[in-house]
Image 1 (cartoon, rainbow, N blue to C red):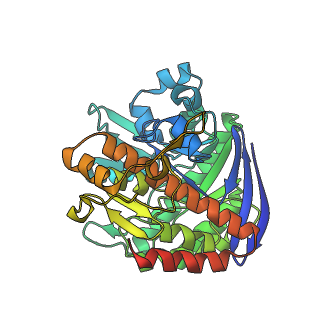
Image 2 (cartoon, one colour; image 1 turned 180 degrees about the vertical axis):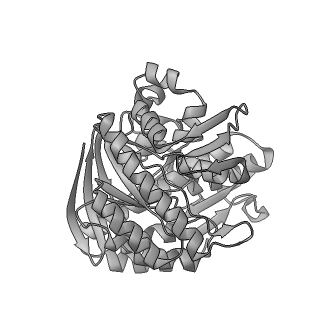
Image 3 (cartoon, one colour; image 1 turned 90 degrees about the vertical axis):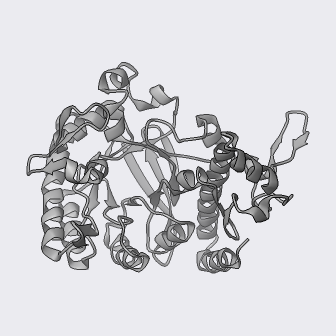
Length: 386
């Protein structure tokens, strides 16, 4: 089931509501990435408290571990990881792509060795649909061939990008056929490919619209290309997708990328950046990025971001109304330098809260008809630095 309602627009930007089998998602939204059935460093309860409405699961890795027998026993991923809100799962295509020379692509699918135990495996569009049906993800992604920015040391040529795009297009048809055969009642999204070539993007888009998916994603960005190249594709593709269906920009990105994506008509985002960067002491704030390991934070009593309401910055309120303060930069610096596991946990809470709160502010600005003003102020604040 999928229903998408557009509640407000400003330019190409949209404020929407996405209804799925496991709940309602207010868009634009950022989706935290939970590769192995968990968003690293935070509990499901913390995710709910910070406003996460939908999270990701990784088809490839969950297929490897714990395996389909366990997931089928639990009736899918929701009960297994104790998350009762919507879940989107990728198709496994990106993970297979990242194996590089360890995989062999054919018209039928992809052969590769399991990175877990070395078993020879074969992933096809049909198998991807079967796995995601067992996962019972609310949004299922088509199996695609991710077009790289570089191929064997050289920039991907137009002919290489076309071959990849057309293969993904044929796989999209097979995915939809198998999805229907399985009588999956969730939503299947097609993925626009075509590399850095706008005319190939348009061909891919037109073909997928003809196949008629409930929603569409833009893949093959944030795969090593310069930022200006990604922005060029971001400006070209989203607004050309059907206006009445949700649009998802895969694997992007920085806070600036998210606001720019909304400006160009994107509704859904995901990226490992807030969690991965948190584990490396890289924090996002309203006024720029902060590297907590730097010596200048050694005795700084301020929170990471004085405007932030997350547990790391603000603390929490007890049932009796008592407020416990947040954590200082000095304390977080100390935890990082000592290698304490609390450091990435608190950093992850902050980064995810920042991303989710940014999207909440974007939605409010769109509702109030002041998104352009908000975006300009956002860029000014981020450029100020911490």
